[in-house]
Image 1 (cartoon, rainbow, N blue to C red):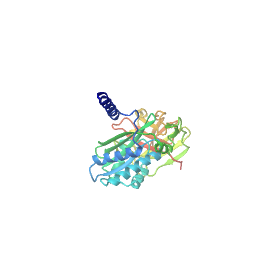
Image 2 (image 1 turned 90 degrees about the horizontal axis):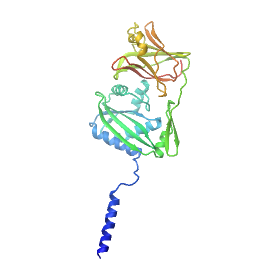
Image 3 (image 1 turned 30 degrees about the vertical axis):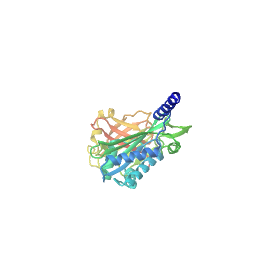
Image 4 (image 1 turned 120 degrees about the vertical axis):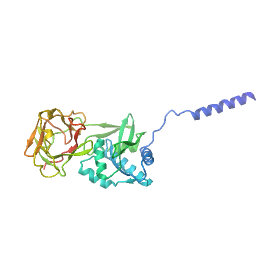
Length: 319
C-alpha cells in the first residue's frame, strides 16, 4: 500500500513539473497579433480625443508597410478613442513633400509633416530581420516636443503572410525581397545608374528643414550634363528672391565644399560625395557634383547646428 501511494505521489509531481516547465519551442506572435497589441498600447498611453497621424513604416516592401499602417489604423478607428487623420489627406501632403511611406525618414521630417496635418501625435515603425524571424517596432512621437510617447516592440514569426507581404519589394527599386525556404532575405543592389541628361524642375519646390522647421532654402531645379549634376536653389517658393545672398549665400564660400554632402538614397553602400563646384548665377545659388549615380538623394549642410537638410530629392524624368 505504501509503495502504491509513493508511486502515485511521484507521478503527480512529474506531471506538475512538466506542466510548470517551459516548452522546448515557443511560437512567436503573428503580425496581426502584434499590430493589435500595438494599437491597444497606443490607446492606453495617448490622451483620449488626441489627433494622431500614422505616417511611416520602414520595411523592404511597400506592400508590407501599407498593410501595417492600414491594419493599425483599422484597430485604432474601431476603438474610437483617438481621432485618426484620414490616409488620403496624409497621402496628399506626402506627395507634395516627396515623402515615402516605406523608406527611412528622419524624425524632423515626420514632425514637420505632422504639424502640416495638425496632428498632436505621429506614428512610425520599422521591421528588422533577426535570423529567420522579424522584430516589429512601432513608435509614437509628440509633434510639439518630439518626446517618445509610446514605444512598442515584438518579435513576430516569419510565416506565410509575412513572406507574401515582403515579396513585393520597394516601388522605388531600392530593395527587393527574395524568399528562400522559410526565410526572406533582402538583397540590395550594389550599384545604381546615373540620372539622364536634361533639366528637372519641381513644383512645388522642395524645401530644406532645420530641426524639423522649414527654412528659406528651396530647390528650384536640377541640371544633368555628362558627369555633372548641378542643383540650383532659391530663397522663395516661387519666382526669384532678388539677390543671391537671400538665395542661400551660406552655400557660397570656399569652406562649404567640405561641409555639404550629397547622399544616394537608393543604396547604402555608396559614401556621400562633396561638391566639385559652387557659386551663383543671377539670384540663384548652385552646387555641382561629379560622377553622381541614382535618382533619389538627400543633401545636408553639416556646418549648421542643427544641420540644414533636404531630406529627399527625387528625379523623375527630365523636362
